[in-house]
Figure 1 (tube, protein in one colour):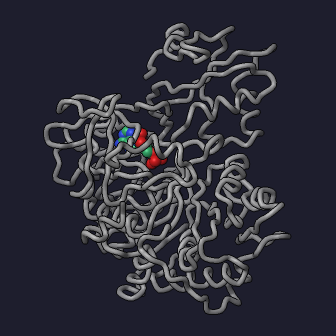
Figure 2 (cartoon, protein in one colour):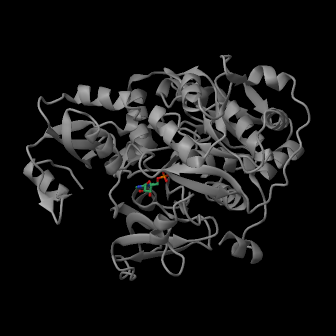
Figure 3 (cartoon, rainbow, N blue to C red):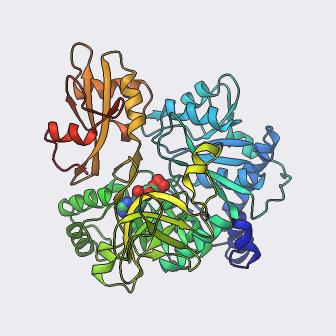
Length: 524
Ligand code: AMP
């Protein structure tokens, strides 16, 4: 429990708001955030966040309310995030890749009072979707003027002094989302002090300091680019963060050159794409990059080598999950360690064990499930008592679901998962969720989904289908799932058809046999 770590003096009772306040007091004129459209100093960010707090308050939001925050990487993401926190309102961080179905499910599940978004961006009308989802009960705050929207640019101009809540370190600061978002959505409550601790200790391990310029290429609604060390860790060290709207190489290369970016955090699949672009582009100046932090999925040696050579930056490998532990290799580690291991936990108070199916520790060096407990590990998903009971051992260790070994030097090496879950380019896809969508199509009578190894994506989504009549093509299947509101990263990359599924036990599809029957190579 966080309280115990605070009592023992391990965790300081600080809030994420303190990070902003300290920046405002100590380095008010320093640039805090840059996005493709503008830049703000720490003092300006503080001012904008307070203005947002005032507008939210004037429009009825109160302490304890939940609000969905659905925005691409922009400065406004942080003005609104801190604005809500100043009132004790808890933002639920939706991924910008989420679509109607996910947004609706989480909106209902979280009992949110509304949605804060920007506008029609990158080919998706976030405002229209927010208006539809909240139609019955809820309000929409946006930066684009539409009927029924609380239009922030106008309201911010007239904002008065907000009355701030007394936010404490133990309070919930925000909710991250985990895995699938239909079926049973999983909301991860992040408490202020625990999240500050995670940000600060990640920043320490990754040698982030006031000279650091961080490039957020992935969505900051993810734990990793937000707080490991991400924008919040950079802020804790009074550095500067650059928010890239997209992860396209053209955009990130421009930011790196213009803002003299010193470090970034990416997943292996993105690294591979950037490398390909580097080979085509001439005159790309990435010479200021000192560190590339790679995490979220398995890194291959060859990719690591090509990346270090092409970018001239040192790789720091990381492993972590929104629910808990964060690990990084250290800058003094050898290539063997940095390229093949995910390092050590960021805190000396993180406890890890590698266990077998019955929870017994395996001998040193053998593979098993990684279970952990520590100062910033969560205490359970929001409104999921049954699931939470299964996730923690009797002595309070959280079952990560990841299969790992511990090397003799105490480094973690993740080798797969014990639970069924596909890691597609660093995004988690839950097979049962995609199966539910597929079974919802009138042309499909049954579906089995699993991951297959892929050189570029790490894993791709494979769906084996039983057709009712005529077989849909992959494109038709994807169109149907998109129409049903499923996010693009969960769409099948490949489909197969069979007449029936091999079964184990009563009705459970034997996916292992299915893969063998179809001769699908590269599966896990
Ligand atoms: P999330 O909670 O969305 O950040 O996803 C966390 C999951 O991503 C972990 O439980 C792992 O399965 C996977 N993951 C994170 N980092 C790595 C890594 N370096 N190598 C392999 N898998 C990883």
